[in-house]
Length: 494
Image (cartoon, helix red, strand yellow):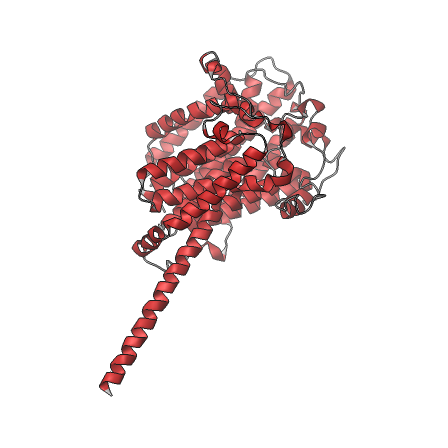
């Protein structure tokens, strides 16, 4: 494991950090605000301190690795449930689509803190027999040789997934030219789309990052590597989902450093994030055009204010906490728990195409978001964060149980793929799974998230199976030749 020694300088760092943090809270204290907002603000501040203390305890026991999933998950989780509510209160931004839902903010924030504590406890102290790294059946060099020998499999997987996604997009009104040029040329009309009938094909877009990474690792042509990367990227941008673009960025960055057994410095990391923010801002401005299949006008890039762009890219995504606050106000007092129907039943039936089951039940459960929050959210694409789904399933018990399961799963991912051996395919799988956490936390819809994770790593499983089968065949043929040689030598002696 990549460890940093816990010494006096680390303790000084944390003391300085907490001092500056508390000073910032004092400077942004909402003087003159209603007591409802002040109580939520102080609860958020206390929760941030509690989260940092838990992370300090974890770091002291297990060391520090920038790519340890608990740190990225804590960053996203803390921004969503603690930092953004406090920031909104500090700037006087109390309304969400015209609704004020801060009345349940204290209770919701406490639930979020308890959920994180359940995650951290399971992540740190839970045990699985399967956590131990699996032995390497083939030497690393031999595995890489087998991987390069099966590059054709990578290309076949890419061709299938790319064509499936292009078929999905074109049947929904876009054109090949529109997708490949990101709306610069041509325009479509999605009004006649049939997304519900062939929606399962969209799942194959999740396979593309892993396939491209496999080719980057085992392919030889540098030009083809960038061609495949571009085709993969435009497929995700054309669908208008920012989180998947962020996941691609994280996946490739993580793999690049893990493959070299390096970690980026603070300055490098800040620079990378700043550069990556630019394309994400552009996608934020034009994603509605992509989703509607309309022509993209890039003129607004030069007129939009920086503050508005940052607000759209960063803060707006994390303001989904409002939906969690509003849900607690109405469940179970007005609408009962769904007892995991969406998490279990919805996940089981989601992948069944409507072409096979025209009257397929909805994979969701409970009331839609525009009922639990307000009618102004109808058609906005808003959703619950992960805690919202867990709470709707079984209240605070649902949050604790599901967050603990989440912690156990991510602990297994870390120990199996990061702390174990350094096989390239293991590092690819870890890099992919690390990036999926953003979607899992901010968009609490387990049926979609479950299959998103499965399809994201499916190419790695397939390629691993093919190369392992090839290696097994080589071993069998070698053993057979060896047996024949021994038999021939015995006959010669006779």
